[in-house]
Image 1 (tube, one colour):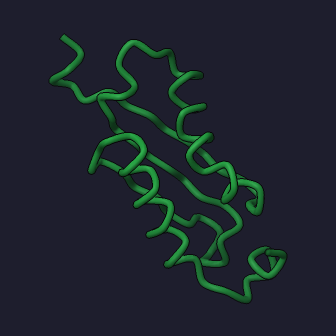
Image 2: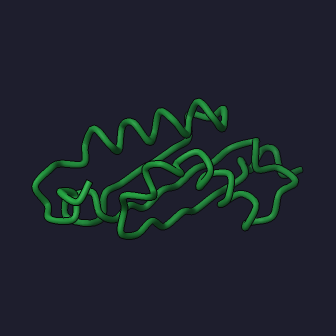
Length: 91
């Protein structure tokens, strides 16, 4: 795990794994996971747009994402999560 912080590994597979986990858990195809640490996997930006967030406040939405990625987050330095409700479902 510490290897990620020393940039001795690439994050591409981790991005894909986290994307798949979020898609499955939150029932959406609108997920973007991006390594913003230069490729070593220490920091990520995550964007998720899901119907599952409807009726939840921003803190609850973020917690839903954190719960899905709990194990992965434990080995990161930082994560930024942005959540959205699809515009067609806000009505």
